[in-house]
Image (cartoon, rainbow, N blue to C red):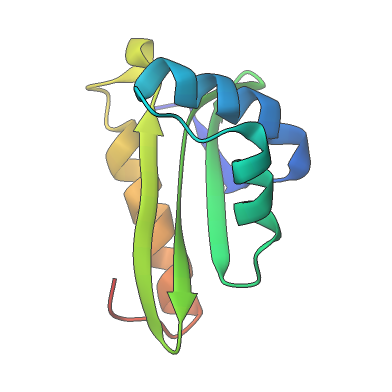
Length: 102
């Protein structure tokens, strides 16, 4: 798998909002994504291939506990382990933040 998973930045918001529209009947808007990204409690990651966002996911954390809020993968990249890779990144990041309950 030749994907890179990195922290989401404001630069990624418009592409993630477009992906939301492809994946959900009630997608988060670009403003909702920006609000999440700006939250002290939120941690979001994008999966990229050749500068193209293929998926993203994230979680929020409060008082040592986390809740996964989103994991989505573009249709053409499904069934290739990308969703699992995003989940692994979320878990890795949560553990680094001393969060062991998601």
